[in-house]
Length: 237
Image (cartoon, rainbow, N blue to C red):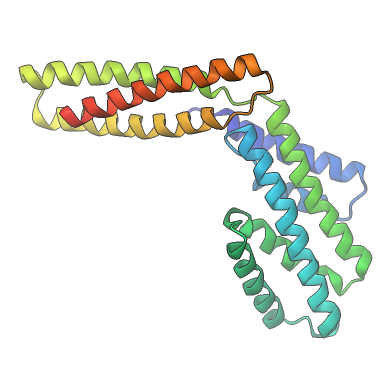
């Protein structure tokens, strides 16, 4: 079993969130760790977008939760009210196209509504813990072993070319049994799907230097042509 960088960074993000939460003297630093679990993304660009979406949706969820408890009264903050507020928050997240933030936003709603009965300070402390976890995970994802999508893209492309060449040669000469050829073809299709994912991640990278940005654009054009060639080769098989 291979432990990838994303797995290690998730563990590190949890540790950092707990550590920062303790330094800030939060009442429940474990909530920061829960928030960090939701945040690690496969690219810096996606991590940045995820952080912005999470901050917006969680602030919205917390505001709705606090407003609902304030209107109804903390003594009447029943499970039914929590459930109704959660449904409303889900619909708002879908409406604003922030579906990926629903999980953590619902955690915010439940924690804030549950804590509000103990006072505003506790509710705000819980919200601060959630924001601490979000920011901590983003910092870890950016600072520790940033994803190298170009390297992975080129390696998978070489492997796919080798697999395709082997299949084209052996299928025509009938050197492979049909079941073996079918298994290799399924592996090739899996590799092509991963190549599409890596290509998309590499194309999303933000480069400040104009010179390197132009170089990256040239590489993307070459890689796109190579991907199309591999896909056509798969269709031939």
